[in-house]
Length: 355
Image (tube, rainbow, N blue to C red; front, side):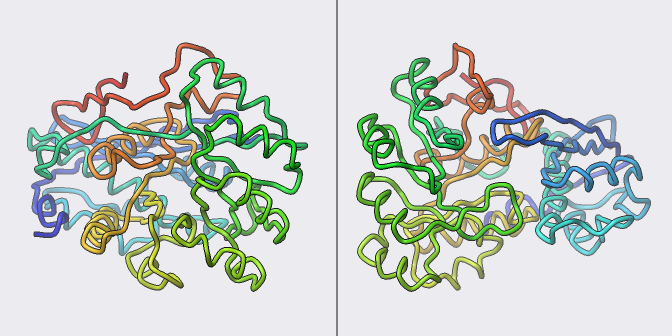
């Protein structure tokens, strides 16, 4: 049975919506804005998080408030998600980037899932007939410009067994690479070659790729620029290390990759809706493709929800789902190096505690 079929018929009652804005400076050097979506019904509440990256999109959303044509009344979870998929969730202002439509759709779907589970006295694991396991994670950070080992040593001083996902940049010297290799803590390198118009765009030339791949021979290689003939040629012997993140918005995107991947980063918000997310998990399991999860600097319920999904669907992967304290500009002990023990709420798409 498809995983979606286990929950799509859950009864759901929706009475009202409200929005809550949040903002915080994060370690990538920008003011992160998010919007929590609260959906209430039958005296209970479900919460989802809109992780659209552009602050002006959040400002417009919060100023306008929830649209009047959002689903209300009694329905199934599947019917709610189907209606949300048909709506323009940016009715007053088109988003700065098209992928934001998927992010907002996920925020509504996840809030409805939370509410439906609460109304039916179920936890997510119970509804899916799965277990919540300990969650492995990596800390995803950038090393500044010019790049420095300091962010690594600062965090290893708190937790010496911590592992990292790092974004190589042109300022990475051979000396820095040697120091990184000596830590034994770099689990993956994200070249971010497929982003455009963001603060993390980084193309990199074949020399950067060659130096990083040689210095860190065990590290996974995320989102390399295989459209560059020279880089593609360099990477052919390393395809078993290559993973994908930015291009994965659907099962079709996984199917259409240039070669079968070892792993893909399944970000719930980037898949958009609840059904596309669960279909992607099913596809990867059926086809022997590993999954890991990724965060997007969530400021509320979204981080815990992503960690819960990771603990259910891909607990042993290099999940970019570290506790938020690790992403602070100056992390403060105590912080766990993992794996995380996640205690889910008795009902809903939520977490009671993480240790």
